Amino acid sequence: MKHLALLAVLLTGVLSYSPSAFAAAKPLRVLLITGGCCHDYGKQKDILKKGIEERANVEVTQVHSDDTSTKARFEMYEKADWAKGYDAVIHDECSADVKDMPYVQNILNAHKGGVGAVNLHCAMHCYRTGTDDWFQFVGIQSSGHGPQLPIAISFADKDHSVTRGLGDWTTINEELYNNIKVFPTAHPLARGKQIVKRKDGTEKTEDVVVAWANEFGKGKVFSTTIGHNNATVSDARYLDLVTRGLLWSCGKLGTDGKPATGYGK
Image 1 (cartoon, rainbow, N blue to C red):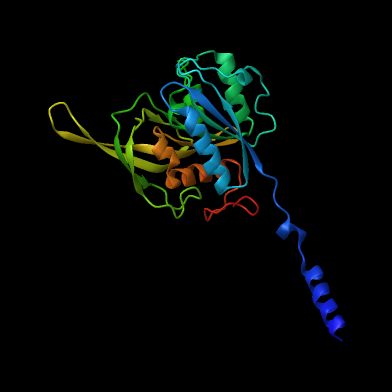
Image 2: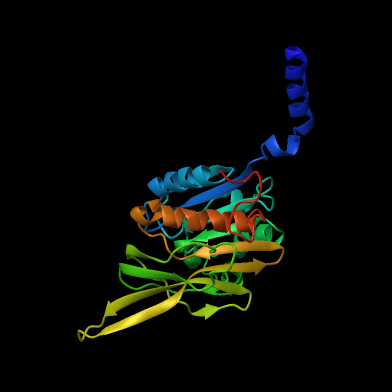
């Protein structure tokens, strides 16, 4: 009788087993591109890879350039199919003076065709070709930034899947990028305020969009201008935001702000 009871328990377990409940989802394949002017990309590439892979079922492949000028180029962008096989690309390069339109169009066409994108910090100041092409992809045109001072970040849309449940915070000294133009396709998610002293000693408050979602052709694009210093890039709150933006760009983020089944950690 004891053997029969044990057999019944085992059979119940087998019958109730659901392969979909236990099978691991295939990791998202993400390309992280770093290099160019003005930032510690050598360390930030590893901070980002580790932080994202700890938060989501993502496999991050790094492509890094040691070129620290504003003319850093990436050989893969010379090919039209450079993003083949990837679900999303994180652009964390700083190449303002690369203005070769066929090269830039190769980048843009991949995302226009549906490859998800995340743009971080200086990516907003890249590829200044004299046209709006790159800015339309990013969603906001920015031409520069102020001094490094703390930025008070507040979420403008607390119901969006990327921001739901996230708390406002104030950064360490960071660069606040200006907003020259917010394109109609861009949806502001967070704003940043920074108090700046004028030359005459008076103060002014800068208040601009610092994180947003954008639609570009078939592609979903998340961008944030925050992320100059290593301490900010290492901040759990920053990594949470970037990881959510990445999952959203791949269609793997629920409306509750949680990763889709199989894509959390």
